[in-house]
Image (cartoon, rainbow, N blue to C red; front, side, top):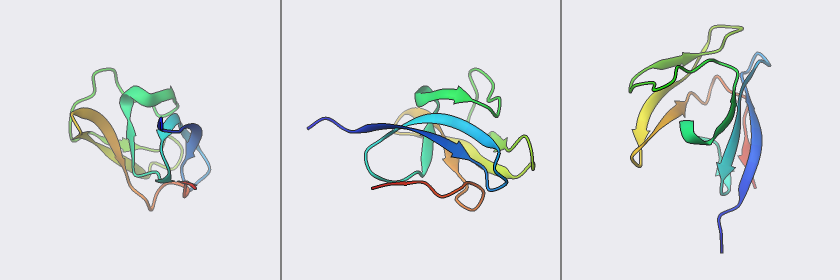
Length: 88
């Protein structure tokens, strides 16, 4: 059975839109792979490296940090800074 893909909007706790993202599967949103971002409202630089911290443009809270996960660059999200997203 193919994996279910859902398009979601990721927002900061302050209400600012951060990303439009294609989430695969069910469960909580833990990480956002850069290649699956449909819209980037934060302004992640092209070819971003590892260990770069990503901040909300409105409240300046740390949204996450770039890491290599399964061979691809992803933003590992700070769960306390984003509005909770769970696909059931």
